[in-house]
Structures are given as structure tokens and as C-alpha cells.
Image (cartoon, rainbow, N blue to C red; front, side, top):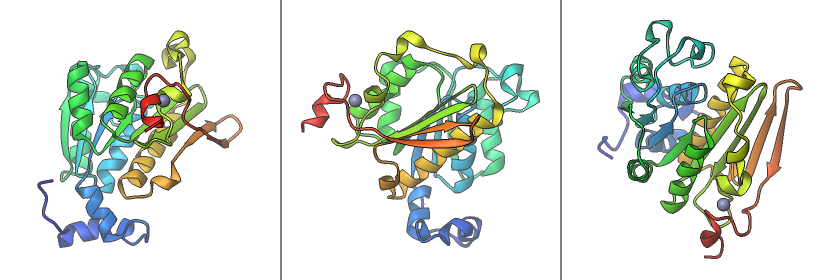
Length: 256
Ligand SMILES: [Zn+2]
């Protein structure tokens, strides 16, 4: 937390529309400015999530992605530009974020993190956003978030559907594995199933929103809720999700 204790005049002006909200205020904006988020995946979800967090004034973003930008990404991964095809996504994303808000400190991790590196990054973060596209990574992130008591905002989108849930480091909160046990067996991909561009934009923006709520002391709004978005019917559903008894990842926490 290297930043000065209070905002300067420029920051007060830059974030004035947010500071005006009773839910944020100066104290909430200060908390955002002093916060660090880890984003795993700079694809369709990570793009809007990172852009909104940077614009909203989060202090530090750590971006983890070892893929390169492909032409078929550009339809929905809006942090990358046509000229970025072939470049590492972590670097292309960092450049866009510097244009949006140069005061946001961005670290680009452009290699595949091993378990220890992932745990270290999660430990350093105030909130973790899972914006990745495979269950193996999702489960690894969840395990580390439970182990190190970090809030996890998990989003997913495919076809014309999206899902989002925040998992809090609390005995009464479910974890990712409580909701999606054994999903490894039926993995679906956007490459095969397809996905409508704004659907990932909606879900990634919701991840940024939930992260801001968690960071500014409004975790009540997200606690124990799985939100399901159906773009075909233009409907949101909110499902209450309790911790799963005997969950291999969080059962020990439930009985504490
Ligand atoms: Zn669990």
C-alpha cells in the first residue's frame, strides 16, 4: 500500500461520479485505489473486467495470460486491437489499460503460472477474478482462494448464456467446487459452441462490478448467489447456493 493516504484534486475529479454515490464515497474510492486484483485470463471476460476496474480506479491489476491474440478473439476480447494479433495477450492488455488509466499499476504475467506462483499471486491480491476458459485452472484458482482466504469472482459465458458468482472467504459461503463438482468431464468451449460477443461483455462487466462491491464493503449483495443470464430470453435468474456438505475443497472451513 504505497500510495498517499488521501486523493489529490485530479483524482477527486476523475472519480467524482463514483464518489458521489453513498455506497462508495471518498472512503470507498480510497479503498479501491489501495486495492490489488488478480485477473486470470485476458479473453472475453477479462477484457471488460480489467478495463472497468482500471477506469474505476483500482490501484493495481495483475494480469495472468500466456496466450497470444488470434484473429478469432477480436470479435469479443475488446482489450485487444486488430494490430495486436500475434502478440502476447498480457502485454496487449497492459498497453490498452495504460491508455485508459495510466495511474493504474499493471503487472503482466505472460507465462503459465505453476501452483506455487498462482498461490503467491492470490495471496498478494485483495480480490481474484477468474476469467479463464478451462475447469482445471478454475479449480486450481478456487483451491488457492479457499486456502488463502481470498474472495473469488468467477464468471463464465458460452453461446448466449452466462453465469457469475462470488465466493467469499467465510464458513457460510460456498466455493466454486460446491457448485460445479466434477465438471472436468464435460468441458465446453466457445471454439466449438460459439458465443455472442456482448454476452461475454455483460458477464465480464458483472465481474468487475462484483469485485468493486466486495472491495468496498458491499459483499452482502453477492453472498451465496449464483446469477444465470439467458440472452435468448433476456432473463436473469438468481439462485441461492449454500456450501456443499463434504466439498473436497471447503468442507474443513464449513465446520470451523
Ligand atoms: Zn466448496
